[in-house]
Image (cartoon, rainbow, N blue to C red):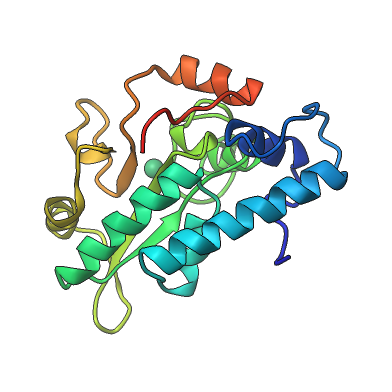
Length: 203
Ligand SMILES: [Zn+2]
């Protein structure tokens, strides 16, 4: 198989695999033959979605493959529509382990360098359950666009009923952010994910 997803966090990967129904054993955080088999099955199903819908740039591919399979499917459909509209978007963030989320949370806080880029600690972000991704939009020459208008256009091109857009949030508006529309609270989502229960009842 290719480089292991979430290499430093087997438990996180097992939760994702179990919520997909691919892993049925203990959530023990140990990489054994059942986890290996489930991971290979997960990779094969990811390959199938890429073949069925569309393949993208390296960075987008890398991030899409960290998502739950139903989110991979929706992310590919979304990206296909956005690119067809002539918008140079990439998926620049997908799933994050709780440890990765905590590292991001510390950025810009406690005397650490860099801007504050998230309000969520590990287990408190939609990116921690395999259902959310962020896009970046780039110019012809690869410059990173930050203005909201480009992100509004991407939403116009790519949104569907299956998705929730951070640009529609009240309070903290997050235009690069998309996730599956699940209709459950973050706390419910976290409980399901940590149990290895399916978090994605649809699509
Ligand atoms: Zn996000």
